[in-house]
Image (cartoon, rainbow, N blue to C red):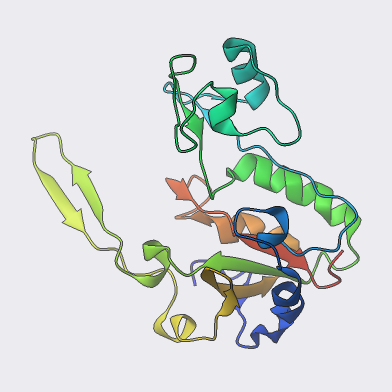
Length: 211
């Protein structure tokens, strides 16, 4: 693996409780994460602007004249009817990344969650098996100063043995299951070092005590 802070788990029965409790329709809370908790919180992924800076959804609301509320949707916030819209006449500068929480808020979240579990040293991380970077099949184009380009096929992040390990099966998607301390998140979500050119947060993660 790309990090030695966590390892692939062969016994995916550690996630059986998740499988039993993801019961809702696709796109709903209980169709995404386990049901049965008294309350749930949303983390609104920050919006990256064209100049590389990031702003919260509240800043977008100031520009569009809309309101951030518990069930806010991005396309509604920017005044678009199309649920897949990323920009609109009211907002044309950037959108939140789907399926990937940037490292800074992700680690801040982990700092908070570590105070709410008795097993911060024993956690599980589920990574979607559809990422080509992890399983092979991804490619990278480099543009050179002389106008030429080169195309590379980086080796998959998971080894052959890791890719052959059992997967966590949930409705609509399968996942590689990793285990390690919550502090391993920085290594799990970043590639090529702390100044990584790209990152990918786990789709799901939880402590062994399921708190």
